[in-house]
Amino acid sequence: MADIAKSNTTVCPALDSAALDCTTAESDARQHFEKMLLSCRQNNSSFAQFETSLWKQVLLLGALLVRLYLIARHQRLQQRAEPPPAGYRLGNPLATRTLKTAFGIIRYARAHLICKKKQRPGGKLNRRKWCGIE
Image 1 (tube, rainbow, N blue to C red):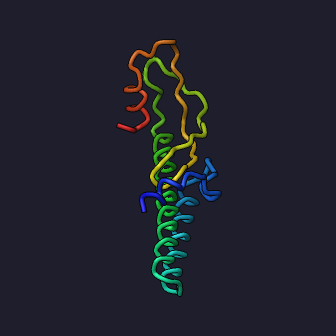
Image 2: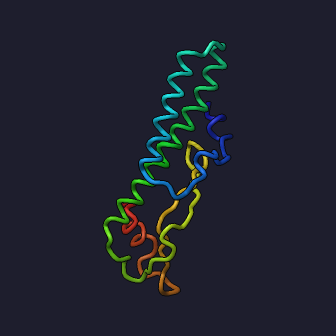
């Protein structure tokens, strides 16, 4: 099964939208889970085929949940409304990023911080703390 997870490197069209709100992302995850439940009840294929199909659906559900997490975190950071750390300025407030996860590639939007000086005073430590990673 690890081979299936590693081979899933394409961006799912459902996850390609970078600027969504939490309500839409949550609705997408719920709808996909409901489809999975229905598939479990109505699937007439062999166990091996069912398991392969289910694994792909679980990976997609995981990607949908990661996307929901990223969107919610971005919205929480926007609500904080505190200035960037010393030595940084806010660049694009909705910069599109690509994240490689165990569930596949996920595109999302987040604020982009730009260093004011050529040498960063605190390196990634300050930026990571401001972005809520630590």
